[in-house]
Amino acid sequence: MIRSRLAASVVAFLIGFAVSNVGLLMVPRPDTWLWLAAGIVMMLTGVAGVLFADTRRNLSIWALLGVEVFLCLTLAPLLWVFRSATAAPGVRPNTLWPSEIDWSAFSEVWSDGVVRTSMGTTLVVAGLATVIAVALALPAAYVMVRRSRGRWWYLLFLVAFLMPVFVLAAPATAQLQAFGLSTSRLAMSVPTLAVTLPVAVWVSVRVVRRAPWSLHDALQVDGASMLQRIRHFFVPYLAVDVLLLGIIVFFWAAGDYALGAGMAPTQDQRPLSATLLTLDDSRLVAAAGLWALLPLLVLTAVFSRRVVSLVGRS
Image (cartoon, rainbow, N blue to C red):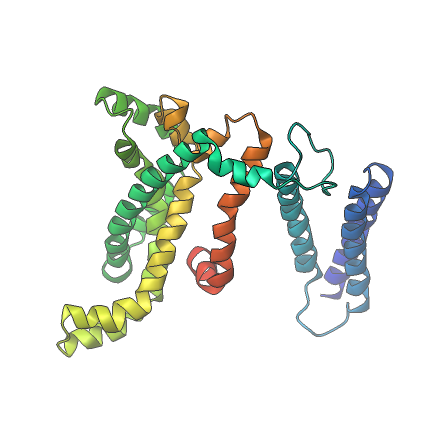
């Protein structure tokens, strides 16, 4: 244990020392201060690891260093996106730290005709595919959790979940064109089920496992009607999780660009994720990305424990 902490302390100090020197020698101001701050924090982590190497507390310097590296690799791209969105028109930013902030791109996103059309397409396609996927996934998850003794059904959906979506883009486009539905938003929702249904089943299994089904069985034995079971079991124990399930599946489908770019014959019929790949204005692309990120941040802040338990480990 002590050797592992000392090794992690040395690695943390060396990484912090390297980051600080790169920031001082190669990075222009004001980004120099960001590199220095990150390097100093890592070096302090190494020093703290040496000081507490022989403690009996449950302390992992490797885990602390991993969190710091993860935060740096996550916050730096987000800061760059914010810098691109708040840059002046016609100005290409070359630093992470913003010197001048222009908020006009956040309002221009809602006034741009192509972006608004693609938002409507995303709402229709991803929304309908989400509703159908959730309606099919919940009964399937119930059977897999409470009725089926094997796990091969769940593994089958997991394989479909891991399958690259772009493999289905060409066959889905050919089928829509063969039936003359290449311009229909509703028809585009059917191939999108290849994206929504596997993830819906994957999350639904966790939703079903979390529910206290012994209470449902007790209500059923006592002769409770369907309305009473909905009131006393489904609403208090499943309603919030099913709502979060729908939101997670919707944003998963809205973030797919492979099927959207392949199925839509023109740019006006593409969903938002595929449209942003073709826009020339980096300010609008960054602003639209931050607008799309905002509800996810609110969701994870309000329902942090539930979201973690549904998509990860509790």
